[in-house]
Every structure is written in C-alpha cells, then in structure tokens.
Length: 172
Length: 202
Image 1 (cartoon, helix red, strand yellow):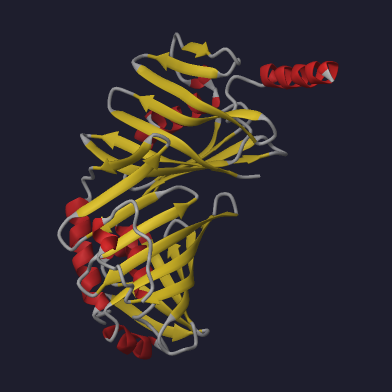
Image 2 (cartoon, each protein chain N blue to C red; image 1 turned 30 degrees about the vertical axis):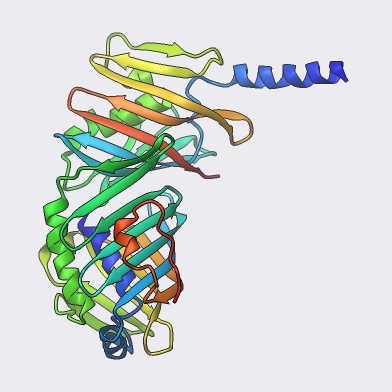
C-alpha cells in the first residue's frame, strides 16, 4: 500500500513539476475583475479562447460599456489581429491590454523590455513577473483542468493602472 | 455601462413592457409595481463562436430602483436605489465595493429606465416581425453600442420569455426568463441588504 502511495505521489509530483510556469497558456477561460484607472474602478471581463489545432489564442476584453479590444495571437504570442474599440486607441491597446495578455500567458520575449524578472514558487509556477515599472503577481493557485495548477488571482500594476482579475470559469 | 444598463432595462422590463404584443405587455407593466426576474444569460462571442452562460437576478420597480445580481460565471451586484449607484465585485477575500466614473452617466440612464418602466418606449423604434418585438435605439449614443434588441413574447400577453441583445461589434447576449416573482415580500431588502438578499415570494 505504501509503495502504491509513493508511486501515485511520484506521478503527481512529476506532473506538477513538468508543467510550464505560465499555466494559463493553452486554456480557455473567463476572468473577471476590477480595473483601477484615474482614481476610479471599473468592472472588467476577459474572455480567452485557446484553439487547439492552431494553438492560437483569442481574447476579448470588455467593460460594462462594451468591448475594449479583440485580439488574436499566434502560438508564439505574435499578433494576428487586433481590433480596438472607440474607447481606446489602438496604440494604447498595444501598450496595455496586449502587453497584459502576453505577460499573463508568458510571452515575455515580446514585451519589449531589456530585462524581465520572473520568480517561481516551490511548485515551479510563476509567482511574479516584473519589468520597467510593470509587475504581475500570480497567486491562489489551484488544481484545475486535469491536475493543472492555475492561478485564480492575477494582479497587474503599471504606472497608469491596476488590474485585479479572478479566474471565473474554465472552458474546453 | 450604457450597454449594461440597456440590457438591465430590457431584462427587468421583459416582465412587463413589451408585447404583441408590445402594447399588451406595455399595459400589463403599468399594473405591476415590483418584480424579481431570474434569468439565464448566454453571451455569444463572435470572435470565438462560443457561448458563455450564467445566472442573473434582476429586481426593479417603477420608481427606477434596480438591483442586478450576477451569480455566475462570476459574482457581482449593481444596485441603483434611485439616487445612488453602487457596484460590488466578489473576490476570494470577500466583496469589494467599486467607485466608478460612469456613475453620473448611469444615473441619467436609470432615469430613462424609469420612464420606460412606466410604459414610455419613446426612445426606441418598435417593430414586430417573425413573432418577435424588435427594438432599435433612436439616440446616437445607444446606437454605437446596440444594434437591436429582440424580445420574444411568452404568449400570455403580459410577459416575454427571452430578450436577445445584439451589439454593434457582433456579440450577442440572450437573456432567458426562468422565473418571475411579482411583488416579492421582501422587495425593499433588495436595496438595503446587499449581500444576503434572497427573493421571498408572497
């Protein structure tokens, strides 16, 4: 019995450590949270869809006023398409929403920073990411979607806005 | 926010305002004081071709007071008591009250909702076809966000069974009425008991 336990425990440990640091990549999910900008707070929702055959990722970010941006990234995080709303100019979407998505999904080579610092927790998943006065904290990891550790809380802090997102639901 | 409140309005008014239809349901609305409507909300995102579903509760009265509570896929509450607008989002550590720059704007819209709650749909073009009631916003601000709204009458001459809102960006939100509670016993609590309110039927 003890041997079986150790074998099972070994498999679980191996599965946990084998997973990539940015575990949200490859998942479809909905995040909900609060955007703090200009001293005001706004509810915000992010819908993320991972397309398995192509490994593309589509993201729709919206507030109660409607969609802010619709973005499609290829498997390497490069932009395939980007549609900005009337509320935010496209260049701002590049500097904010697109940057946030790339950082959350771990495409840090595309962030345009000379140095990106990343820390992992004891399980090998990303805990923090920061560069050029911009930081993300990944926390409240839970096992979801086939024993994958996913961060349920993400806090983004930049020089002009703060964003706190909770993992609301997971898709297929 | 505008779009949200428009959804809100049509959700709460679905029980009353429009009907075969439109006039019948409109008349019925004038005779009902307070209502709680439980609905399934399905948002179809054009970019994905997929639907995200959830559950909502809307409480409203003819004075323009509204409580919109989302139970899933996330939890949030918006309350407008006729004067103040409050929004709350649930995080793992508990509820957080938001401040929002859109409040004054929302208050104005809410005043418009009150008008509509009393049976005044003058801000919309109303048409009936394919067994549905089609509403198209007249003002340019609303037109930027909402393409149209399709109401499907329940067939009782007093209520609708679903509301489909089409955004100008191609996304659609379908609100399907699950249950309507007229004049809930504890209706006032919807605006005072933010986190523990549960609809009590008379």
